Image 1 (cartoon, rainbow, N blue to C red):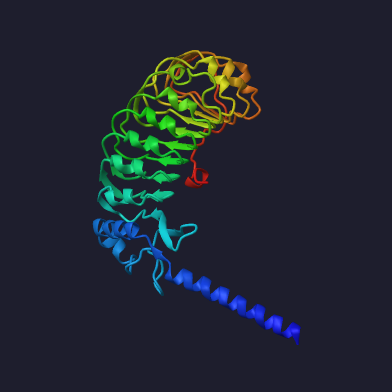
Image 2: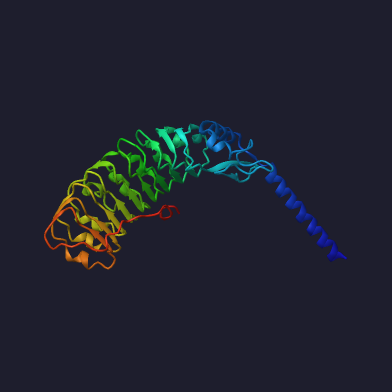
Amino acid sequence: MAIHFRFISTAWHLLVMIHLLLNGVVHCKTLKRDVKALNEIKASLGWRVVYAWVGDDPCGDGDLPPWSGVTCSVVSGSDYRVVTELEVYAVSLVGPFPIAVTNLVDLTRLDLHNNKLTGPIPSQIGRLKHLKILNLRWNKFQDAIPPEIGELQQLTHLYLSFNNFKGEIPKELANLSELRYLLLHENRLIGRIPPELGTLPKLRHLDVGNNHLIGTIRELIRIEGCFPALRNLYLNNNYLTGGIPSQLANLTNLEILYLSHNKMSGVIPFGPAHIPRLTYLYLDHNQFSGRIPDAFYKHPFLKEMYIEGNSFRPGVKPIGDHKVLELSDSEFLF
Protein backbone atom coordinates (compact mmCIF):
# COMPACT_ATOMS: atom_id res chain seq x y z
CA MET A 1 0.00 0.00 0.00
CA ALA A 2 2.85 2.38 0.88
CA ILE A 3 4.58 1.58 -2.41
CA HIS A 4 1.36 2.35 -4.29
CA PHE A 5 0.99 5.66 -2.45
CA ARG A 6 4.59 6.66 -3.20
CA PHE A 7 4.01 5.86 -6.88
CA ILE A 8 0.91 8.07 -7.00
CA SER A 9 2.72 10.83 -5.13
CA THR A 10 5.71 10.70 -7.48
CA ALA A 11 3.47 10.68 -10.56
CA TRP A 12 1.48 13.62 -9.19
CA HIS A 13 4.65 15.66 -8.58
CA LEU A 14 5.86 14.81 -12.07
CA LEU A 15 2.59 16.01 -13.61
CA VAL A 16 2.78 19.21 -11.59
CA MET A 17 6.34 19.84 -12.76
CA ILE A 18 5.39 19.23 -16.40
CA HIS A 19 2.40 21.56 -16.02
CA LEU A 20 4.54 24.28 -14.50
CA LEU A 21 7.17 23.86 -17.19
CA LEU A 22 4.66 24.05 -20.01
CA ASN A 23 2.84 26.90 -18.32
CA GLY A 24 6.13 28.78 -18.03
CA VAL A 25 6.93 28.25 -21.69
CA VAL A 26 3.48 29.32 -22.85
CA HIS A 27 3.45 32.42 -20.72
CA CYS A 28 7.09 33.34 -21.29
CA LYS A 29 6.99 36.71 -23.02
CA THR A 30 9.43 38.31 -25.39
CA LEU A 31 11.33 41.36 -24.21
CA LYS A 32 9.40 44.46 -25.33
CA ARG A 33 12.58 45.98 -26.74
CA ASP A 34 12.94 43.08 -29.18
CA VAL A 35 9.24 43.01 -30.08
CA LYS A 36 9.40 46.72 -30.92
CA ALA A 37 12.59 46.29 -32.95
CA LEU A 38 11.26 43.35 -34.97
CA ASN A 39 8.04 45.17 -35.76
CA GLU A 40 10.04 48.18 -36.95
CA ILE A 41 12.12 45.85 -39.12
CA LYS A 42 8.92 44.28 -40.44
CA ALA A 43 7.59 47.70 -41.40
CA SER A 44 10.84 48.71 -43.11
CA LEU A 45 11.33 45.47 -45.06
CA GLY A 46 7.85 45.46 -46.54
CA TRP A 47 5.56 42.80 -47.92
CA ARG A 48 8.23 40.22 -48.70
CA VAL A 49 8.45 39.21 -45.05
CA VAL A 50 4.98 40.20 -43.87
CA TYR A 51 3.35 37.01 -45.11
CA ALA A 52 5.73 34.93 -42.98
CA TRP A 53 5.72 37.23 -39.96
CA VAL A 54 2.30 36.72 -38.39
CA GLY A 55 1.22 37.61 -34.88
CA ASP A 56 2.27 40.21 -32.34
CA ASP A 57 5.16 38.27 -30.79
CA PRO A 58 8.12 37.49 -33.10
CA CYS A 59 9.09 34.58 -30.85
CA GLY A 60 5.66 32.97 -31.10
CA ASP A 61 2.57 33.35 -28.97
CA GLY A 62 0.17 30.56 -28.08
CA ASP A 63 -0.63 28.61 -31.24
CA LEU A 64 1.42 30.90 -33.46
CA PRO A 65 4.98 29.84 -34.28
CA PRO A 66 7.98 32.19 -34.22
CA TRP A 67 8.39 34.45 -37.22
CA SER A 68 10.29 32.84 -40.07
CA GLY A 69 14.02 33.40 -39.69
CA VAL A 70 13.70 34.53 -36.07
CA THR A 71 15.26 32.44 -33.29
CA CYS A 72 14.67 33.25 -29.64
CA SER A 73 16.05 32.03 -26.34
CA VAL A 74 14.84 32.26 -22.76
CA VAL A 75 17.17 34.35 -20.64
CA SER A 76 18.61 32.19 -17.87
CA GLY A 77 16.92 32.78 -14.52
CA SER A 78 14.15 34.90 -16.04
CA ASP A 79 10.65 34.54 -17.50
CA TYR A 80 11.28 36.37 -20.79
CA ARG A 81 12.81 35.65 -24.17
CA VAL A 82 15.18 37.60 -26.41
CA VAL A 83 15.93 37.36 -30.12
CA THR A 84 19.28 35.64 -30.69
CA GLU A 85 19.27 34.98 -34.45
CA LEU A 86 17.84 36.82 -37.45
CA GLU A 87 18.09 35.22 -40.89
CA VAL A 88 16.27 36.96 -43.73
CA TYR A 89 18.15 36.15 -46.91
CA ALA A 90 17.53 35.60 -50.63
CA VAL A 91 14.14 37.35 -50.66
CA SER A 92 15.12 40.43 -52.72
CA LEU A 93 14.89 42.89 -49.84
CA VAL A 94 15.48 46.47 -50.96
CA GLY A 95 16.33 49.70 -49.17
CA PRO A 96 18.89 50.63 -46.53
CA PHE A 97 20.19 48.50 -43.70
CA PRO A 98 17.28 48.24 -41.21
CA ILE A 99 18.62 50.35 -38.35
CA ALA A 100 16.28 48.71 -35.82
CA VAL A 101 18.39 45.55 -36.12
CA THR A 102 21.00 47.26 -33.95
CA ASN A 103 18.51 47.29 -31.07
CA LEU A 104 18.55 43.48 -30.99
CA VAL A 105 21.57 43.53 -28.74
CA ASP A 106 21.40 39.81 -27.88
CA LEU A 107 21.86 38.68 -31.49
CA THR A 108 24.52 36.03 -32.06
CA ARG A 109 23.79 35.60 -35.76
CA LEU A 110 22.69 38.16 -38.36
CA ASP A 111 22.22 36.91 -41.92
CA LEU A 112 20.83 39.27 -44.58
CA HIS A 113 22.83 37.92 -47.50
CA ASN A 114 21.71 37.73 -51.12
CA ASN A 115 19.31 40.67 -51.08
CA LYS A 116 19.37 44.14 -52.63
CA LEU A 117 20.10 46.26 -49.59
CA THR A 118 21.91 49.53 -50.26
CA GLY A 119 23.66 52.39 -48.49
CA PRO A 120 26.15 52.12 -45.63
CA ILE A 121 26.29 49.75 -42.70
CA PRO A 122 25.40 52.02 -39.76
CA SER A 123 27.98 52.66 -37.07
CA GLN A 124 25.45 51.37 -34.53
CA ILE A 125 26.38 47.85 -35.68
CA GLY A 126 28.95 48.06 -32.89
CA ARG A 127 26.14 47.63 -30.35
CA LEU A 128 25.72 43.93 -31.22
CA LYS A 129 28.36 42.76 -28.75
CA HIS A 130 27.21 39.11 -28.75
CA LEU A 131 27.32 38.70 -32.52
CA LYS A 132 29.31 35.70 -33.76
CA ILE A 133 28.25 35.52 -37.41
CA LEU A 134 27.63 38.58 -39.60
CA ASN A 135 26.68 37.71 -43.17
CA LEU A 136 25.87 40.66 -45.47
CA ARG A 137 27.40 39.41 -48.74
CA TRP A 138 25.66 39.61 -52.10
CA ASN A 139 23.96 42.96 -51.49
CA LYS A 140 24.61 46.47 -52.80
CA PHE A 141 26.03 48.07 -49.68
CA GLN A 142 28.23 51.10 -50.25
CA ASP A 143 30.60 53.50 -48.51
CA ALA A 144 33.31 52.42 -46.08
CA ILE A 145 33.28 49.36 -43.86
CA PRO A 146 32.51 50.84 -40.43
CA PRO A 147 35.38 50.51 -37.95
CA GLU A 148 32.77 49.80 -35.26
CA ILE A 149 32.65 46.21 -36.53
CA GLY A 150 35.96 45.90 -34.71
CA GLU A 151 34.00 46.22 -31.44
CA LEU A 152 32.23 42.88 -32.00
CA GLN A 153 34.62 40.91 -29.84
CA GLN A 154 32.83 37.55 -30.21
CA LEU A 155 32.68 37.60 -34.02
CA THR A 156 33.96 34.43 -35.70
CA HIS A 157 32.61 34.84 -39.26
CA LEU A 158 32.52 38.15 -41.18
CA TYR A 159 31.12 38.02 -44.72
CA LEU A 160 31.01 41.34 -46.59
CA SER A 161 31.91 40.10 -50.08
CA PHE A 162 30.08 40.97 -53.32
CA ASN A 163 29.06 44.50 -52.38
CA ASN A 164 30.26 47.98 -53.33
CA PHE A 165 32.27 48.88 -50.25
CA LYS A 166 34.87 51.59 -50.79
CA GLY A 167 37.75 53.01 -48.82
CA GLU A 168 40.37 51.08 -46.88
CA ILE A 169 40.06 47.92 -44.84
CA PRO A 170 39.71 49.19 -41.25
CA LYS A 171 42.60 48.14 -39.06
CA GLU A 172 40.08 47.84 -36.22
CA LEU A 173 39.18 44.41 -37.60
CA ALA A 174 42.41 43.25 -35.97
CA ASN A 175 40.59 43.57 -32.62
CA LEU A 176 38.39 40.56 -33.48
CA SER A 177 40.42 37.97 -31.62
CA GLU A 178 37.86 35.18 -32.23
CA LEU A 179 37.63 35.78 -35.99
CA ARG A 180 38.13 32.71 -38.17
CA TYR A 181 36.74 33.73 -41.57
CA LEU A 182 37.12 37.17 -43.16
CA LEU A 183 35.65 37.53 -46.66
CA LEU A 184 35.92 40.96 -48.27
CA HIS A 185 36.33 39.99 -51.94
CA GLU A 186 34.47 41.56 -54.86
CA ASN A 187 34.26 45.12 -53.54
CA ARG A 188 36.02 48.40 -54.37
CA LEU A 189 38.42 48.53 -51.46
CA ILE A 190 41.63 50.53 -51.84
CA GLY A 191 44.89 51.03 -49.98
CA ARG A 192 47.01 48.43 -48.23
CA ILE A 193 45.87 45.36 -46.37
CA PRO A 194 46.44 46.14 -42.67
CA PRO A 195 49.32 43.98 -41.43
CA GLU A 196 47.61 44.08 -38.03
CA LEU A 197 45.26 41.39 -39.36
CA GLY A 198 48.22 39.04 -38.96
CA THR A 199 47.80 39.25 -35.19
CA LEU A 200 44.45 37.47 -35.33
CA PRO A 201 45.27 34.16 -33.61
CA LYS A 202 42.41 32.09 -35.05
CA LEU A 203 42.05 33.49 -38.58
CA ARG A 204 41.86 30.59 -41.04
CA HIS A 205 40.56 32.18 -44.21
CA LEU A 206 41.34 35.66 -45.56
CA ASP A 207 39.89 36.67 -48.93
CA VAL A 208 40.43 40.22 -50.21
CA GLY A 209 40.49 39.30 -53.90
CA ASN A 210 38.95 41.38 -56.67
CA ASN A 211 39.43 44.81 -55.11
CA HIS A 212 41.81 47.70 -55.85
CA LEU A 213 44.39 46.99 -53.16
CA ILE A 214 48.07 47.90 -53.37
CA GLY A 215 51.20 47.05 -51.42
CA THR A 216 53.39 43.98 -51.06
CA ILE A 217 53.23 40.62 -49.32
CA ARG A 218 56.37 41.60 -47.41
CA GLU A 219 54.44 44.47 -45.83
CA LEU A 220 51.49 42.22 -45.05
CA ILE A 221 53.54 39.62 -43.15
CA ARG A 222 56.02 41.97 -41.50
CA ILE A 223 54.80 41.28 -37.94
CA GLU A 224 56.72 38.39 -36.40
CA GLY A 225 54.61 35.28 -35.85
CA CYS A 226 51.78 36.62 -38.00
CA PHE A 227 48.83 34.59 -39.29
CA PRO A 228 49.54 31.54 -37.09
CA ALA A 229 46.34 29.68 -38.08
CA LEU A 230 45.89 30.90 -41.67
CA ARG A 231 45.06 28.19 -44.20
CA ASN A 232 43.68 30.11 -47.18
CA LEU A 233 45.06 33.45 -48.43
CA TYR A 234 43.30 35.03 -51.40
CA LEU A 235 44.98 38.20 -52.74
CA ASN A 236 44.06 37.77 -56.41
CA ASN A 237 42.91 40.45 -58.85
CA ASN A 238 44.41 43.47 -57.13
CA TYR A 239 47.41 45.73 -57.78
CA LEU A 240 49.96 44.12 -55.49
CA THR A 241 53.62 44.58 -56.42
CA GLY A 242 56.97 43.24 -55.28
CA GLY A 243 57.98 39.63 -55.00
CA ILE A 244 57.19 36.60 -52.88
CA PRO A 245 59.31 36.93 -49.73
CA SER A 246 61.03 33.85 -48.37
CA GLN A 247 59.46 34.66 -44.97
CA LEU A 248 56.16 33.43 -46.41
CA ALA A 249 57.39 29.97 -45.42
CA ASN A 250 56.66 30.97 -41.80
CA LEU A 251 52.94 30.62 -42.53
CA THR A 252 53.21 26.93 -41.85
CA ASN A 253 49.47 26.15 -41.97
CA LEU A 254 48.94 27.68 -45.40
CA GLU A 255 47.12 25.44 -47.89
CA ILE A 256 45.90 27.86 -50.59
CA LEU A 257 47.90 30.87 -51.85
CA TYR A 258 46.06 32.78 -54.55
CA LEU A 259 48.15 35.58 -56.15
CA SER A 260 46.70 35.58 -59.69
CA HIS A 261 46.24 38.79 -61.67
CA ASN A 262 48.43 41.21 -59.78
CA LYS A 263 51.60 43.09 -60.72
CA MET A 264 54.04 41.01 -58.73
CA SER A 265 57.53 40.34 -60.04
CA GLY A 266 60.90 38.75 -59.31
CA VAL A 267 61.94 35.12 -58.94
CA ILE A 268 60.12 32.50 -56.90
CA PRO A 269 62.13 31.79 -53.72
CA PHE A 270 62.95 28.36 -52.41
CA GLY A 271 61.42 28.84 -48.93
CA PRO A 272 57.65 28.63 -49.64
CA ALA A 273 58.18 25.17 -51.16
CA HIS A 274 58.61 23.97 -47.58
CA ILE A 275 55.18 25.08 -46.39
CA PRO A 276 54.05 21.61 -45.23
CA ARG A 277 50.42 21.58 -46.38
CA LEU A 278 50.60 23.85 -49.43
CA THR A 279 48.06 22.40 -51.87
CA TYR A 280 47.07 25.13 -54.35
CA LEU A 281 49.48 27.81 -55.60
CA TYR A 282 48.27 30.44 -58.08
CA LEU A 283 51.04 32.57 -59.58
CA ASP A 284 49.46 33.23 -62.97
CA HIS A 285 49.16 36.59 -64.71
CA ASN A 286 51.88 38.49 -62.90
CA GLN A 287 55.41 39.47 -63.91
CA PHE A 288 57.41 36.67 -62.30
CA SER A 289 60.59 35.52 -64.03
CA GLY A 290 63.41 32.99 -63.79
CA ARG A 291 62.94 29.38 -62.78
CA ILE A 292 60.73 27.71 -60.21
CA PRO A 293 62.73 25.70 -57.64
CA ASP A 294 62.55 21.92 -58.04
CA ALA A 295 61.30 21.63 -54.47
CA PHE A 296 57.85 22.79 -55.60
CA TYR A 297 57.62 19.89 -58.05
CA LYS A 298 58.61 17.44 -55.31
CA HIS A 299 56.15 18.81 -52.75
CA PRO A 300 54.01 15.91 -51.45
CA PHE A 301 50.76 17.89 -51.20
CA LEU A 302 50.97 20.46 -54.02
CA LYS A 303 48.18 19.53 -56.45
CA GLU A 304 47.90 22.70 -58.56
CA MET A 305 50.41 25.37 -59.53
CA TYR A 306 49.32 27.93 -62.10
CA ILE A 307 52.11 29.85 -63.84
CA GLU A 308 50.77 31.17 -67.16
CA GLY A 309 50.94 34.86 -68.02
CA ASN A 310 54.43 35.42 -66.56
CA SER A 311 57.99 35.63 -67.88
CA PHE A 312 59.37 32.36 -66.60
CA ARG A 313 62.22 30.73 -68.48
CA PRO A 314 61.33 28.20 -71.19
CA GLY A 315 60.70 24.76 -69.80
CA VAL A 316 59.06 25.89 -66.58
CA LYS A 317 55.92 23.81 -66.22
CA PRO A 318 52.71 24.04 -64.22
CA ILE A 319 51.45 21.37 -61.83
CA GLY A 320 48.05 19.70 -62.02
CA ASP A 321 45.01 19.69 -64.25
CA HIS A 322 44.23 23.40 -63.91
CA LYS A 323 40.71 23.05 -62.72
CA VAL A 324 38.84 26.07 -61.42
CA LEU A 325 39.02 26.10 -57.62
CA GLU A 326 35.60 26.58 -56.09
CA LEU A 327 34.74 26.46 -52.41
CA SER A 328 31.16 26.06 -51.25
CA ASP A 329 29.59 28.11 -48.49
CA SER A 330 29.47 25.00 -46.29
CA GLU A 331 33.26 25.06 -46.09
CA PHE A 332 33.13 28.43 -44.37
CA LEU A 333 30.17 27.97 -42.00
CA PHE A 334 30.91 26.03 -38.84
